[in-house]
Image (tube, rainbow, N blue to C red; front, side, top):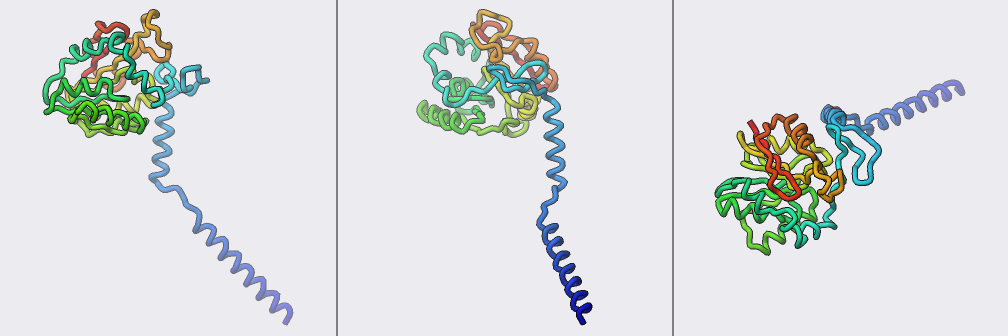
Length: 258
């Protein structure tokens, strides 16, 4: 009798243990194929970049030979609207060179407070449109207030991400980045998304402080050479069209989507 009870007890204990193990296994969430694909894509994306010891103004991430600069946060937005900017950069010269016309669709990437956005909006007129893209919600809010204050109605603000401008495919005649590209944490992915948003034959313009000119009093990581810009842009299938050197301290390098 004692042996029978002992055997029954062991059988019951084994059954309870098995039940607990099965319950624990059912609670484990195994990675889906989508999760595995996302992880593989992330690993592939990271392979485009080299990790380095961060410099004073960089993020410790190198792309095609240059360290990416740290982004200017929304707290420094007043610098974008400084009174001396028009004299220092001569935006009217750049706008004239862009040769925009009524009805065109333009994307201002890294628009910030909209310093260039409202001027671009005037160029394309009421029948045109400007997408003002920024990754900082605070900047987007400031831009919206600036557009409302100026009575600008043909601007659509867009909250982009670190990897995408989030614009419709083949919707843009011209995309412009003014002192922005060197700060993109994922320049390869963002440029891919810009190319996708361009219409066939659409243009993308990189406006950067001239790294070739030591007299340009900007921190080195916040300047780019024409050689570097052309190296990175052509890697995405863009065709160099011309370089605008009439600006006081920047160059504007124009590419076209085939």
